[in-house]
Image 1 (cartoon, helix red, strand yellow):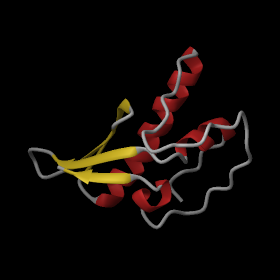
Image 2 (cartoon, rainbow, N blue to C red):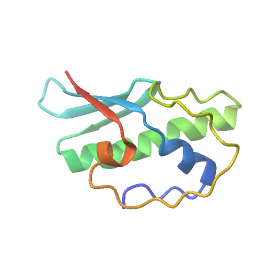
Image 3 (cartoon, rainbow, N blue to C red):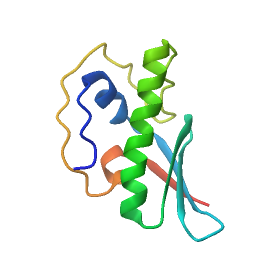
Length: 107
């Protein structure tokens, strides 16, 4: 499992339906960006590398915002208010997009 976040608040935020844009770079590598968190950028030469880097980048972006007391923006597709704290058990995703319920936009 690629997402092994121990902080329950970070794990809860990582599980939201973020909008992820995936494209190819100039050298045919893959780049994923989270629309709502512009600093969450992942790269990789394979989908597996991209997914691994994605989880790390998303977690670091969320942790940094929380540590600085900054607001973590809500995903565009999130419709329900966020609870203050919930227990989350993360299952291994089939793919990052399937797990996150994310809208992937290939450009």
